[in-house]
Image (cartoon, rainbow, N blue to C red; front, top):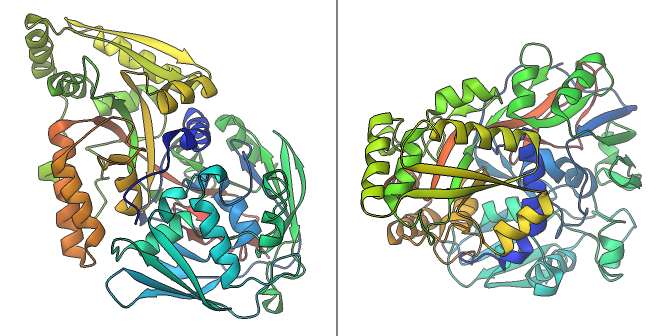
Length: 526
């Protein structure tokens, strides 16, 4: 079902947004809920306006073009407009229903039945029903829509059984398809608006969520107001009358604004979470994936695993984290040390100056000197990181690193569309290995930007996808970790966390997916 990602050109908008977040010090995803200070307890009061900060504006606010893979991007705004069908609870790593009553399979993952809550309507009064879900999921599959989430519908047949029942049939069994729904297919827009075309549905969205979009000043602010037709209005939800989202790309400025009371909430990552620890309320969610140097393994010098290994051995992640002070935790591989899928015996190779120099010398003696360009987006954090790597590699013989700095759009074109790079920055937000690890690492996936073709990794990914038993899943992903550590298509230097940072004015903070907040239950403290 989900074995192939959509054409890579369609990833440009998503990666562009991800790079903006990374450049602002926002990295990460979520696997295990690890709440920090939780903030005020008890239910929120009714009414009031919450001010939320965001490192970047939305590219669009429809389910197809919005970037909701990572918490600091569009996830909270999408939850405000649409409500999720189902979501991944980061504290338990289980899929829970919301607009849906259930999502289940009775045949091992080939056929999935989605039951919707009865009586729900979109904010324009049209029915939120099985036909609406089918319309959205089928639109994801259309190449001309250019959905960032198209891979979730590959090989998928969607049927309307009755107004509240959707049947999804996969070409290949996937007992973990509910995670794909929670990650990529969870937001549903009103077909009445979709019929008006992308100029309307991208900028004037209509969902069934607790809020509607009142005003959008590009690059500056979005204003959401309470949805009077909300399906949970009889419960007094949402608590808030209004949510103001203000764009503030500088993390230091975000922190100071929150600390001074100029805003209430931001959904950030490492740098902001590190600053806020002890002074503001935080709810960090630990990530797999993290921050990495990514290699194009089809081009010299990194078509030779010795060159990749030499780079990985040459840099000390702990010293890197201390020097750059960007909030990341030194990594030991693709899976965070706290992850149930991490195995210390399969960790990526540790810093080893002597072995790195030996490999650089060996390659040079064979006529394959490590000489490469490191391509980064033009942002302060990214450039500082590149300069750090360059300064440390300059301490070795027989290796030369140049830095190519591009603005974000040119960077995305060069790396994602043209795949014209030798080494670059990479980040992934992995709530659960399925489906994100498959999309990034499986040999046939167009989202595998490294050109890495590993039969061992493909077998591990297939085993992880088909497994439901936790022990079998762990065994599969330990095998994946071994393949990554042996071949090093990427070197992960920092684990990440992301999640909300908020003041004592905020109550009712509950997380979903990669560490974003459910907007139907958040509010101001009593």
